[in-house]
Amino acid sequence: IYRELLLIRIGRSQVLPMGIRPEDIVFANPSKPASHIRHAASTGVAKMTFDNEYELHKIKKFYPNARLIIRIRCDSEVAQCQLGMKFGCDAIHEAPRLIACARELGLELIGVSFHVGSGCGDPPVFRRAISAARTLFDYAKTLGYRFDLLDIGGGYPGNSGTSINAIAEVVNCALGDFFPDPDITVIAEPGRYFVASAYTLTCNVHSKREIFNPKDGSLKHTMYYLNDGVYGSFNCLLYDHQHVTAIPFKENYSDKLLSSSLWGPTCDGLDQIADDILLPDLNIGDWVGFGDMGAYTLPVASPFNGFPIPKVYIIASQETWKMLKDLLPMTEDHFKHGTVIHSMNSYGAKTTIVTQAKSLDTITRDIALNIQVQV
Image (spheres, rainbow, N blue to C red):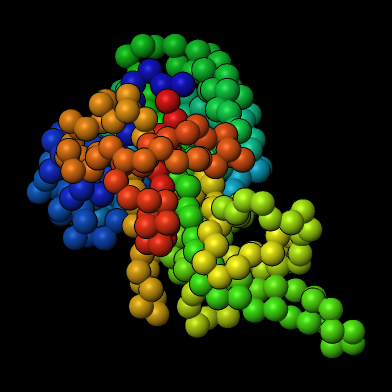
């Protein structure tokens, strides 16, 4: 899907110490505080996006030698998280005016970027966006610019059982039609695609409450309280519109499923993970797993009410361990051979090796967010 991968969108303070060249970093927030622009200038991070005239004047003042990328709006009709309401200028009416403004200010423009929306379910939108970018490449040329960078953003699926093939086919066809020039650098932002299915969250049932029918005394509903919630890993329910599936780590339980709900550990009534789902009868101390928890979970977690942020334990095959153990920022201590455990087959994961010499109970007691490396 990419001719050249230039995927460095995380914080500059994190990537620069890893040896990433400043010229390979894109500061991709179209609305930046002045202090951030000055810091980018001081570290040599010249590539940055914009989508309005105020940003152009700000950049002119604090970093006139920046290399700019105009971000346009082209929204997917189906997306897990829409982004166009906040970022991206209109490609037809606003973008030409902004390119002309940049020319008047003497600023350097090098390309076009867009993001159709995170978790895109509308592959044809990529063709529309790439076509709009081609039009702007041609318009900029009439003003003396020679764009050479196209950022096709993110939106690629990453959950277990999904495929990038439909989007890849649309993207490759559109690039062949509108950008056949091999000198154009095409970059993308497949964050969810890389990490969504890499993490499995395991939680402990620390409390239980049963609700009975006042008329006949029959069990009506069971509430289970877990040691992670919406202020922790499950913030994805609020901010990323995710839907999670609970898989009990319990063998030989009854086939009878009961009306249940799952709750986080804090004092907030909003801290609910799942409402009115069917689960077997669980006991205090049982474990519940959640697959596809790698995207937009831990980075937003907080220690609200004094509950710790989940710990991460790496689970990998011996072959993967050998491949990763010498890579930065990992050290030998991160990859210790451990015990083979049974994986969550419901999510298609393979049998893996615990990287710490600890039992599953010890790991999950720490609200372990296990990295399942598929090999």
